[in-house]
Amino acid sequence: MHQLDPVISIAILLAAALVGGMVAHRLRQPVILGYLVIGVVVGPYALGLVSDLVLIEAAATMGVALLMFTLGLEVSVAQLRQVGRVGLWGGLSQILITFGLGLLVGVTLFQWSAPQSVLFGLVISLSSTMVCLKILLERGELDAVHGRIMIALLVLQDIAVVLMVVVMPLLGGMTQDLPLDLALAIGKAVFFIGMAVVLGLWVLPWLLGRIGGVRSRELFLLTVMVLCLGAALSTYIFGLSVVFGAFVIGLVLRESRFGHRALAEITPLRDIFAALFFVSLGMLLDPRFILENWRLIAATVALIILIKFLGVFGIVRLFGYSARIALLTGTGLFQIGEFSFILAQAGTNMGIISTSFYSIILASALITMILTPLSLSSVSWLYAKFTRIKTGRESAAEEISASPAYELAQEVKLVIIAGYGRVGGNIAQGLHDAGIPYTVTELDPEVVSEVCRSGIACVYGDASNARVLDRMNIRKAKALVVTFPDPVAVVTTVKAALAINPRIKILARVHRTKEAELLKSLGVVELVSPEYEASFRFVTRLIHIFGLKKSERKQVLAQMRQDGEITGFSPDEEE
Image (cartoon, rainbow, N blue to C red; front, side, top):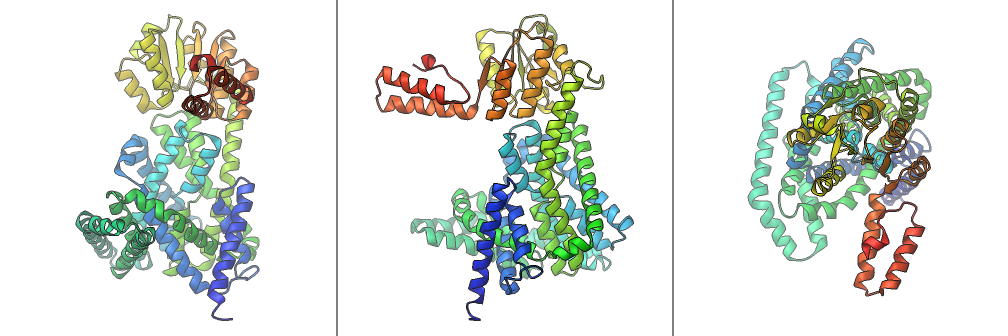
């Protein structure tokens, strides 16, 4: 029976992860929360169903290595170029400011030691990519301005984890010749990166090409696993963190022609071991500790939220974005991230922090993750309500600026395009080709700069603000096109526009049925759902391919139009 214990332990943890993940999904929470909570339930401080903690720790280490390996496969230099100034300089500023405030709070308020305070600052400087991505996808805000900023900051945070991992071993002996130890660690890291680059240029393509030529998925997957764990072992021998080696080899492998295939093959295995990792983290949390120290945990959570929210809010505002964008971005990023667990666990293994300190961090992370979707929804609802109350009497502090071309177009009965992303840009090009005058309003200052340089009539401001719309001469405008992916911004913009000009024709982008019904009731002329339009286009092409008669095609398209909750193309136009 003793020989079966490791198998039983893994089976229990996988089953527990499945249950926890399903419950979290049904409650519309990130599955990571389910893994963590179920880990607490089956762990030694609760039901005690799992006893082989050594085996679980080994599986968790593999999960961390695979997690960082796939991060290297996914991150690219092109992504960093796309995030713009707010992603690069704003992301660096956010990490440094949050780290500094966390260090200050740890030393002065909680009276922690310098290594513990440094680790606390590093931990709270990171947010959860998984949690934020899930929330943005569910809310349909991945392409919204605040969504793009959040993703940009998260990408930089994920990259910064690698540097944090390099300096982690130094925290255990901060007072003993720190500059020399730091220089030695950086030297080892540079040497390892150089070796990885050499392997990536000459050895890995040849090796993976030979393995790929065998046409065996098992051998290819096994090769990728060996590369990942071999790199992790190499950095361990060098005295660096195992996750650093896994990340570097993933980054090198990404630049080869086998990067996409390696990511596709390794992702399912990564998800399994990552689930074990998060469950094992939950197993370290003692529920009685939370009950006995709830005041300390509540204070820690409050300080984390305050530090992160104010830091992100201030930085986003500093880069020229509106208060609404800064508010949503700060609210979406105030949680502690999954990579923070890696740092905390490493701190526990190195003896930098105690078990009780780790429990405080883990409990705070759980609470901030749970609060994030609730807070973001509440902030969006409160902002919409506040905007309705203030319609027509907005603060004069709202920043509005216009391009020179705007002055030439403001007296014409024109089309106002709210939002100049990919959709807004295509609409603008179509109107230009048709000779229809238009003007643009956009919240992203970097986009506004590009639009102004191209000579397009443009206003920098929030279209949901009645003062901005009035500045755009909406009283004389003939039509308003709202292209925001953010449903709250769409609804508030429509209401503000109709309050000023009830006769204006409004066309709006919408994703969810709830907002569609509301916008229809407000009198929006046309609702466009990118998802519905794509499906309608696919069906139209397919029935042509299969040679249905014109009368049958019309009947099918008309029925699809009738069944659809959001309308798009006209069947006559498609025919």
